[in-house]
Image 1 (spheres, helix red, strand yellow):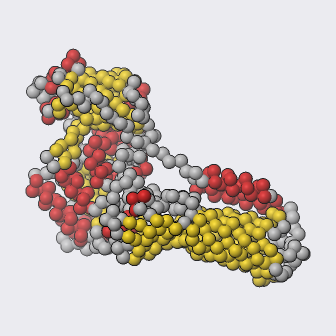
Image 2 (tube, rainbow over the protein chains, first blue to last red):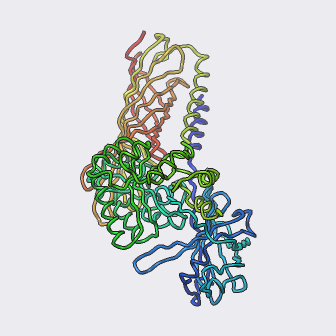
Image 3 (cartoon, each protein chain N blue to C red):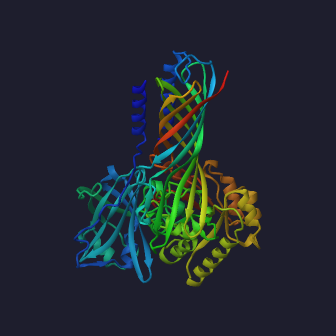
Length: 423
Length: 204
């Protein structure tokens, strides 16, 4: 029997080992790209390079087509532009920086498959003979044709050695607008993104993932500071272990700021830091403040108002709505002065939406397409955002068969592909 | 992974039960025939060692106290076969450490716990028992940094132990127990050794 016990303990030890999954960003250094002869691409080139491309080589890895979209991250007067390729296959995206070397356009970056941990380097080129001149020098907006992007990609940090080729098909869809809302500021920590969920860092990445807006989770610390954090408690899913457990509301902001690091090493941000990032660093134009705390919403409302005024003063298109996910928040929302004029997104019934005069109704996707209800909301001058749609088949279905104005997803790159690629 | 552990624990208990079910000789602490049923009280005190380096991040420049007190009380029903069943609770500290933040300010964090575990055990050899069980841990963070904070969390966990008991009288024994206490927030839990007083306090 002692033998059984010993074996049992050893087996228990063995199965106690938890596999840690990682998807580290590859080193994307490319000497040619970083050489002294390269110069940034112009605004016209960045605009013209956007479009839907057929993947003529490498489709086994990336699918039949991809959408190329440009985004930026501003840091004061310094702005970095990125080219994202949202691929048809699974949930794969490519993020590159672009430069010009003489008459050749160079794109360097990495690719990532969100359904697993696969990632790797990618280097793309558009030569003069493949149409670079019309992207670089033509001033006619609709003159893009015959552009071919060639390059190589690899796995992990291995040198890129597999060929990829893309051919320009058409411009991006512009006939209908869809708010592509990234969940938790850009994506979940569990999806092994380069930044943790609900952080300043992931908000900066959101537009590279295809998002036009973000949903962020607002909580309040013991000393009344609004912060971003999804879960009710400090836990191993979101933070590096440090001995602190229990509800986040038990801790002061100083304690959280100085003692807690999120999974990728970031501090827990304040809501103010997050809104500053949206406003000053990104092209995002929608923020969904998901209320995760009980009690008065006045402080949240004041901050919403402040940032809407700031955005307005900057001439910046930015909508910020207070989320109403349950009856308790609904009651707290209704306690706000003049609450019917406070921009909100209500997840509850159409009657609740009307009561608080929410600008947006946000039904759960499992409730179906709800065509009649959505049309009714439109007739009332409201928008409808569906959440949280992650499976590519569902994204396609809700995009093509539904009449939603926005879609919340952990995989905004997949939403962006289906949206922009649709003819 | 947690499900695997629970399934495995039940598998272990099942094995133990099968082995025990074939034997029905009830023995006293002195190994002599005893009453058919009894309730045994185990009062244990000792120390636990927290072996993991996780939980004390380098950015806090931790000075870790890995050895901490573990005090537990267990009540076991000893029925008409070797497999016993009972409850264990107590108080323990998984670890505590002194921290220094980036500005040089000092503080202290202690992760304490109160386990409440349903346990099964059996005598595998004269005076030697193995015990395993699962249940919950009421974790409690004691933080002394920029003010004092106490914060609780309920989490799943388990324990496994082996004990040796030397009989002092027919109903009283003294022994030692090697114990592994695990709560899901604690990487690999705490490995401990306790002195143990065993009292067969109720018989029928």
